[in-house]
Amino acid sequence: MSNYIRPKVPGATVFCTVVLAQRGSALLVDYIDLLREAVAETKSNRPFQFDAWVVLPDHMHFVLTLPEGDSDLGARIGAMKARFTRKVKAMGRVGFHHTIGPGKVGYNPTLRRSQSKVRKGDGGIWQRRFWEHHIRNEDAFRAYVEYCHINPVKHGFVDRPEEWPYSTVHQRGM
Image (cartoon, rainbow, N blue to C red; front, side, top):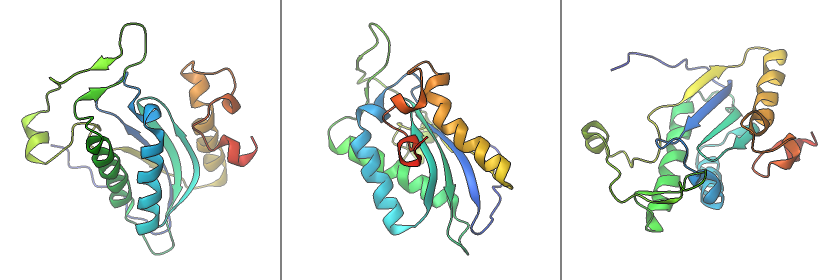
């Protein structure tokens, strides 16, 4: 068990990566509308600002700014993940995995969760926890926003960031 303690910085701007448990899955883009709903509901209950956001088939990156006086990043990410999980399960998609690549699309009703995940009520869709890096200056901010927007190119999904439909690159006019 990790003893990592996340920084608690009110009003922080943070780069985050959140990943599905099943690498190679396309669940996030296949159910992008459910993910967007989960994020919108979370923002409604616990406000924050996306400075950049990109959703790839099995993970997402974002630069998020918390409100002044609020440092609870984990609650927001946990709520997004939980809401998306509930929405997918409500559609009867428990154990359902779309995977990318030839011959890798299908339903996996035998997906097993570890005893630890079962005990903690984990839905089995997401990797536990998330990766974050607090942004401390304008250069880092620009670099992480660019990282978000270039990521679909890096993974070979498109040739230019503007070609990827699940990105805030379109909102920024980049």
